Length: 416
Image (cartoon, rainbow, N blue to C red; front, side, top):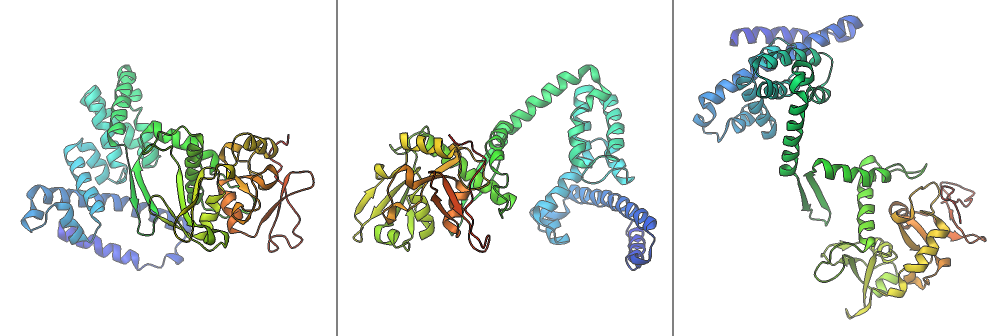
């Protein structure tokens, strides 16, 4: 076997030295197809070798804790990649031999093999070996047309083609089993980074995944013609908006005897001079700009301290834009007032036009509704907001965006 593989390696080396730029397009496409097919067939050989070495216990005999760890060192792979090879080798060895033969013959790709193996095993358990052989033939044919993701989706209804009399019952059983797996495997990990940020990882069950998408999908669209957020940043901001809405609802369970809320601690002098940083009640620290932005959010309670550290203001209720005042603001603005934004009122914060820490009052003439993204944007950018002569907000763009600085308005919301 080593001699044959060495000869194949020599042929591949010759191909690698060939000047591809000089080849006709038709030959390049044919060569690509052939190279891909050979890659899959060679993968079948590699997996057969791994399975045999794993069965002989070669890894442990050479001092490794597992075959995956041994492969990591031997082939310079990551452990997850090595483990996938061991698992796939086992699947191909213990499952329907037709899957292994299809891979060795170059009829299917490595990533398609476990999809087909899972489907064939399911058919075997539900309808017996004859139906499993039929399913294998159908799936191998489909593998020539569809990528692994679509192939897996199609394979869920393979019984419709090979055993239609039991397909519905088997589909229900498979769906129930999938639901049990999803319930068992659901988890969310929240890891604190050293700089106060959090890393979220996890797997959501189908129902929760649907809820999350329903909540954030309406919020992840670009928020205006000059937006610069990536899709990932928009999803991040949408999750923050959902959390703000939940906090604002007042329906979250109590935590330590208090309603769910965020407490920001800062010094009054630092806040008014736009210099002071702040700290959350969780111990994390915020920049001075973030403190000032949160201080005008109706969902946040400020805990302002004197120079001696004594509380001067712990959630001044008269500062908050709530009740009839917020309802009047909603009637006036109809949603986020920033030009080009269609966010509805429930996703918006009440922003003090003249900051309350600078002496601004809490009134309809000193407030404007802004969604989470544009609230942050207004605090970070050179945009300015003011009330026009008709009492509606208008926004003055920075000079770099519009040298004339012509005020702009939001035309998405119907004015009342």
